Picture 1 (cartoon, rainbow, N blue to C red):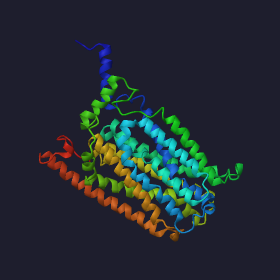
Picture 2: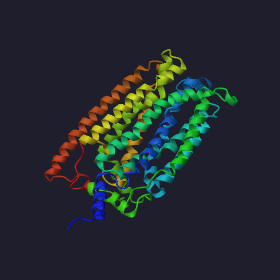
Picture 3: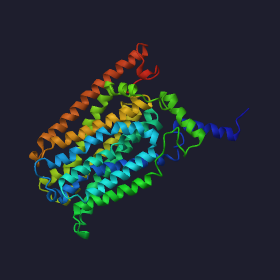
Picture 4: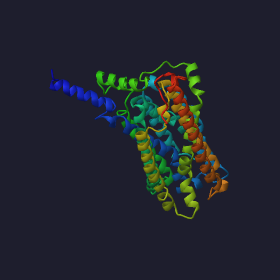
Length: 415
């Protein structure tokens, strides 16, 4: 007997859910864009200090004395690294919406305070507080996204996640210059307006994002019970870790000593090093090259556009050819939470490295910093080659039944 129209329609919907993230076909805007906008603002808030320096903060706070500017940029990353793993371990208990939105409001408040500092010591304290507040956002978002999508669906989502930050970072220099034109308004210097206006944008967007951020797929309230089940089932069939596993100290330690996670982390750290170097020092380098303030900030934008196009292309190829990606080669909620935090933490190490190798003594050309940036990229290539050879070897052994990868007999590394 042929299927009724209703049953046929239900069958089509079921097939569609298998091909696309359950419940997100028409509502994917509730997941990715909310995080993209928040990441964009978070990157702007941690790097707009270069705009403020270029438009007058360096003179008012005497940041050109010794290595004060490097200290100011570097000190952000110490608490940023230390608080990432604890934040990722509590995100399920607190809930993504409550955690991510509240810390965004907090760092917006800190950013507002940066607009009223009187000396570089107060600015350093604000940068420490900013690092504490921002620590949980990036790893929390990456962890959450990997729980919604199957292994080979994540690259494009993460790429758009990063892409929004790149585009925003490029335009932030232009916006920062525009904000600085308020110099003298209400008796406030232009560089202070940069912090004040960006802070207002951050707090406003954080309050809006509370209504947009979704929960984990097994608890998402915008899905029906059947859709939640379908969302969990599609991940469970693909990698067997849709539901959270019990988190223990022993398990956390086991995850933290996995060499491949640290390999991923080093690659991410060395890849963020030039990103932070650009964010913190490109306007400064251009200014030292003889360009005026306006031109220095405007010329800082084009590299981000090129990086955005490159990111989008690599993400497409990664998903199409199922190429190596950290999220594709880690199983279980607990391990992805730990690995996300470690990798983003190593990204913070990259920020520290960028802050330290671009020294005031090397101004304006920063030759040692530029050479260090090239060296970091060479290390990334070497680690990727080693990982590829290792993963291929392990996959062959798993095919022969000699090893079980990640505790799952059917799991194979994505290469």
